[in-house]
Image (cartoon, rainbow, N blue to C red; front, top):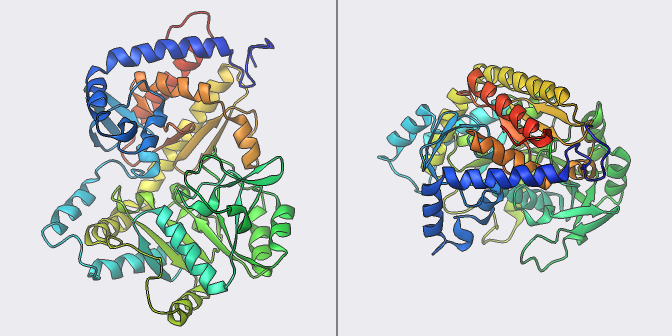
Length: 464
């Protein structure tokens, strides 16, 4: 840490410096992006919050950056700046923007129909490939991983005749209502940011800290838990890795109490062609994968083990006729199936992941070296193609520690500084993703801008 000054945050950066650099970067952004500003002002006339989805304002820019095009590892904005994109749609474009093979598959499919509510040959190929790739034999589809998680919870609650869900503090599973429960001073509290919820989620959702086996067993002990819904590595609160032996002990513990383990690989698919579970030998009862599965086309899938699948089928057969609450008209549409087929067979390949992992390791090493050179108490974590830096000296072991390491103003200024120098990372935390089209030059560009950002934040001047 650079200073013991009381105005210096626990991150090692002086609060006044953060404010000064942020003010300069906001001014620079406005100067650089007049066309984005004009378009944002036009959009504000008829779009709530001025953007298609309100969280598009979470970038922290003075107004939303407007996209003109995106290809491979690069994005071009309306003011014709070409950005090295390490956000990649927060994993939605993990395989690059507009992959040519996906574009070709979509082009061919559009002449043969979009939505029919009937299966095609692609469905058989996709399900066979998913079974081989992820080790679970039976599959269904959804439009998003949020939907897939929601549907899996319905299926498992019906199959087990149990209502209770266990999640980990600070978890990310899309916008499934059931998961918005946090630990506050050790007590479960429904997240106050969840809009319009009229039911008390704490009645059927239990929340424990990641990596705490004793807490997990205590939550399982009543014998009423349908499933534990987890990411194998926590991601959206900053990355939290499982400690050595955690999942090896947690899996039999969950099954001892008759509960199911659902792994959400929406982000950890960055670990390899079969995700984190296959790479690390984990055996979930159900698995969800979304975002990159269709090369950027909205789609998701969820699979069941050979033991769970018959119970799911029986639950449907024994239910009264009528709507199950599972699925939508556009689920498994023909465009999505065509996109998944080509993505699974031609993009989610060992060769692509080798390139992605190699460059991600290069990035992680470079970030760590830069942080060390600036003598800051930060750490760097990598999960496959996914890399993050966190404002704490050692990697957090649970959601509480990860949340305590966050510093919204510091994230904001670093992200904006990088954006003004042609590098895009996620707005929500400090995540950077490598795609098959990312080059060593792109990584070098990010590292150079990151070094300049740290120099500006801790130096006497505001150069950078």
